[in-house]
Image 1 (cartoon, rainbow, N blue to C red):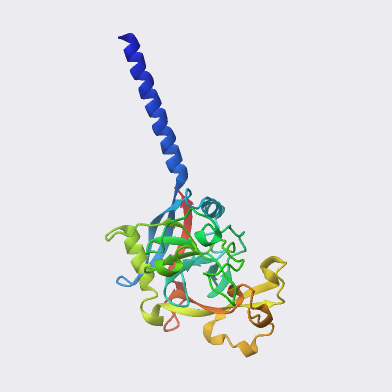
Image 2 (image 1 turned 180 degrees about the vertical axis):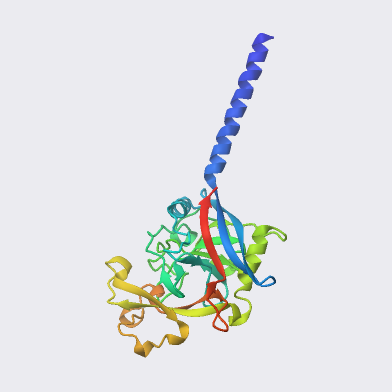
Length: 294
């Protein structure tokens, strides 16, 4: 009887150890991020602070998740009076909402540092891992491609993603799957806090230009692919003030530079801004206060 009891105890100990190991692996595979955001509520006409919770899938995209977590811990995605406000924005057509590489400061836009690039963990780059699809709720790592090609071509720019996220507002699976790394998701089930936040953020870009302003991003300098940022400087000005003919040293990725990264051609971003009528103080309508690993 004693021997039987000892066997049972040993079996239970092994089971508990296995469960413990499984729990540790699961925690290692999925990293949860809490994002404190401030979003304009159009019904109450006030800014409301809420918490958006997302899961990052390390077992599918380990290099990407490790890099993103490191940036979160460093405060890269946090806002402050000294640094500026990290905001959500759209670029070009309303396919996805983005964040990461721009800050709103002194009623202007600045570039948010120069974080290191990450190896592209997606099928077209020969990495089988992130099999998540580009549906609403997905979180992907934005990257560039050559100006003469497209994101679906193997042009040497698969590893240019660094810190900019994109979040589809609809299903992009038919075109994007396999060409970008989806490293996480968030649940936006109806009635959840995540869904309320997400719907309010999307609303900033769904009401014409009433709730956002347009800015033009362009690059100046001498192009040199052997140096940091290819020797170019990013500039951001209000859209209406951008005139190509008035900008000295404007770089275009075309002609003999057609194989240069597409990102260095100028492009428009839509920034959520409120209280801009009647001389009111401008304020970002959808911003991140801080991010933290939980």
